[in-house]
Length: 218
Length: 218
Image (cartoon, rainbow over all chains, first blue to last red):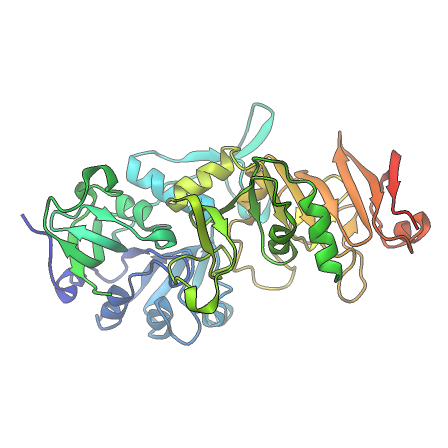
């Protein structure tokens, strides 16, 4: 029961208008080969959930942005890519700005079947606009809804053929949360090993969260 | 020593043995250099590392070990890596003892504004709102006035706030202010060329003067 497929085959599961979560903090932990593969697919009107939107000069998700395939971005920090700022200012990109921890927790909630949560983060700020608020033990909290992407594009250090995953250092970041939240999870692994070669005590994402594994190499 | 180093050195005195500390970008990053060697302090970075070590030599950079400013760092013995949701669970859950951040403005009631400038498109918040809402003690390090000499320490913030009433201590090149029981209190003067009147003149916020005000000896 191997989940290993080619990049091209895995990406056929992405359709026009889909919401796609893409791992990474900047380019660290970003599945670059899957993103490059996506740039060759004839898809449009994508909503991207990612902490950032690539780097200037069309790196990472910046490439997809340049192709006008992204209509909306949900994430915490888009100012590091001047192109994203330009697209937003020109009205070509809708942006939903989410505090970084709220972004991670909305994904965690999505993957864990939680219908949302109350958090102190952003209470009383511009980012609380339109959100339900509640006083809990004397402090103001705001309601945040779960995120359930259609597809997640994930970067892992190693995957076995079942789709068990381990990560590398700070390249882990949003990848486990996104892998668990999405309806379809596609993993770009630097190395694919046989089942039994990963230590069960060290597996970070168990295989039931993973649908496809592609070989990304180093 | 420059002004920024002076502020960082004073902030380092606030860190206790065994503290878990998150340092923001700018002056806060410099604080790490002034933590006394006899104190055991653990630096947390929200992109998923507890146990941040010093900046590596150029030939020793590991591209998968970065801090929240996307700069290369090292991981000390005893360090751990974790996902974004776990990292922000640490922050929101009150497991971070001290967060040291910069600010655009601070208000007399402890409000902080450090993420957005009015009139500019708001496209980045990162982890700032999570950190100020969740850390046990929020310390702001900033220069007393803007580069243009405009005051930053105000009766109320006119920039969009990051959180309400969370600042516990404010350290500038001239002074240290404490926030307690909805009051802002001048605790220390850090520059022996400054009189109380001169500090008042550049600090529109209303504050009281501590009974035990410390002044640098001439």
